[in-house]
Length: 105
Image (cartoon, rainbow, N blue to C red; front, side):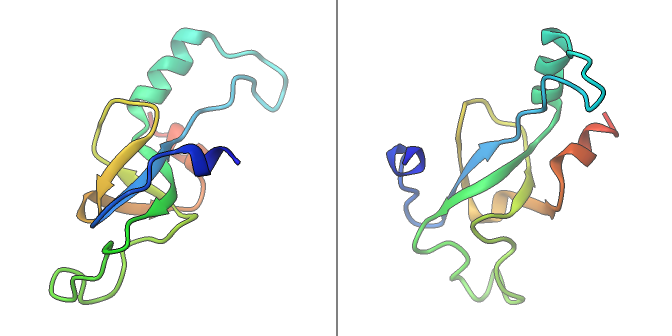
């Protein structure tokens, strides 16, 4: 499985796969590569693939519990790369559908 080949996050880190917008609309219109690239850059959300063993265990910093879990879509600050290793406190929020974020770009 492809996920097992990805790096294992250590400590307080999460492994996040950035959202990739669809290349074709529901109506069948193919979206230009330039528009897709802009959407990838502007969209700072991703899917939590893995979590390090210490993620969200600091009860002082996360008194209300974890901010996200494996399988959540999260919003984060801008970074480069195909997959991202984020610290647990770098998650800015969670969302249900990353497609909905594209409508506000």
